[in-house]
Length: 310
Image 1 (cartoon, rainbow, N blue to C red):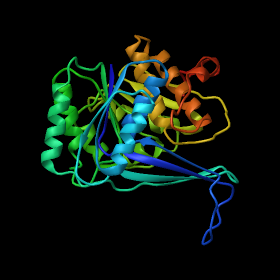
Image 2: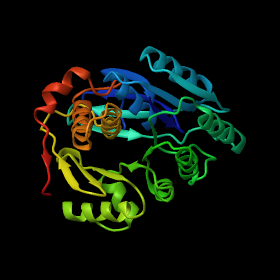
Image 3: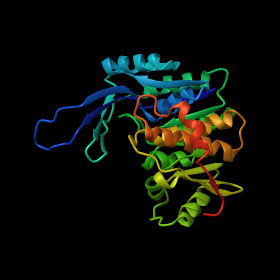
Image 4: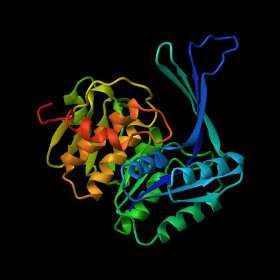
């Protein structure tokens, strides 16, 4: 089982226009609403690719009900602890004229300490223990920046392995808990190590510095350049083919979902990495809510290669 944790769930509303005109009325070509959050996006990918998953989150209000209904439609089992306030709605504005996407993220509800403790207690009681936990995304109002680190420390103390995908202070503090894996993009890892990274060698060196802190795998997603994987023993880059980009939402989450599923299926790290990049590539070719599509994976895997020399 691959379990996911979304501490700040959302309804993502994708508004599609043919050409945005500022300070004027714009007519939408389509409006698509779907449950979001980095953790649940990983669950979507694992479910789409035929793997077992369970999504854990906190939800509230009408948007929280819509979030749960969305997961039911996607056939993803979940536990959503109710909280006061309203689950946030994020806006994704897709402009078909220039193929740009503008994302506006809402802060989310205020979640108090009692609710957080109750939620973490439930996570620790989950049996059987999942093969992997994937934690990711922003924190709701009222949550300490150290919350991911605290959860990872407690879960891994019980023998679990955790993948963390977040940013800024939550990522910096999360690294101190020594998660099994982190997956920053090129900008997030720059903020994490506190300096500009200009080449693949720079990204490798940054990854190595994080491996020395006790992380087993550092994956840096590099957009059209694929992804760089750094472990204790080796570094390699997984390339991705050129495809028509329809959406950038959830590409990194799809990489995590495919990679985690590969490990669950007892594939090697390299084969799991290829599956992760294939899922990520499929995601940018498609629009939500399912992100990647299973049928895309076999032909994409033929076009995805491992580069040992970066």
